[in-house]
Amino acid sequence: MRVVFLLLLCLSGVFAPFPKQHQLNPFNPFIDPVWQTLDKETKKSVYANWLNYEPEKKAFIDYLEQADRRKNADKTAWSEAKQLFKEASKEWVNALKGNLPTPDRTAEVKVEGTREKPGKVKTTTRYKLGSQLQWENFMAAFQLALHLRLAEKRALYQYFLEHARKMGNKKKSAEKQAKSDTQNLKDKVKGTYLKFLDKYKDKLYKVWVKAESAKKDVEKEFKKYA
Image 1 (cartoon, rainbow, N blue to C red):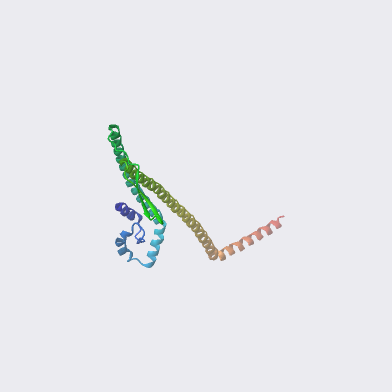
Image 2 (image 1 turned 90 degrees about the vertical axis):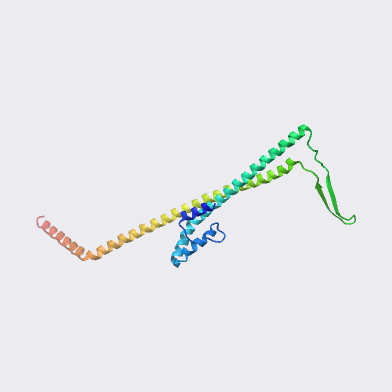
């Protein structure tokens, strides 16, 4: 699992120290020397970037841990199941041969206190079949494996949820950036247009005056021949 952690650390591109409760906190001694060389603004930028990706990566690490625990629990449950089968098989063979001891259904009863002030009553079973003990071990192992399997599914759901949130934030950021770029382009075009008008307004005014004068001359000539 440590190899997986190191791989995730390398792939993440993040070299900010991890919190104490984080699974990758043991790697801080390797990160701190680089971290201390960064200025305040760079650290702030790194942490801002880290917060965008860390929840998804932590959720993935949590899922891997739960998967490992579930696999180990499954192995234990299967091992207990095999032991149960062996014990039950022996009991069946002994029962068919008439060699199976009869369980003592009575129990040792112990009464605490006196007749005037009776206390608790404790009972102790004298004998259990070997398969009964193995059944108890198997059920405990099976319940743990089932619990960890559900926990693994929950961790996987959390990973997909964090991935979806990261993609949503990325899309939202892209839309915001596109809107900002569009507005900047509009401002730039508007500024360029205003500079053009300011630079050539005198020339444009002279052209307009000449156009108006030419228009009047044409109208006068037209009236002469009308």
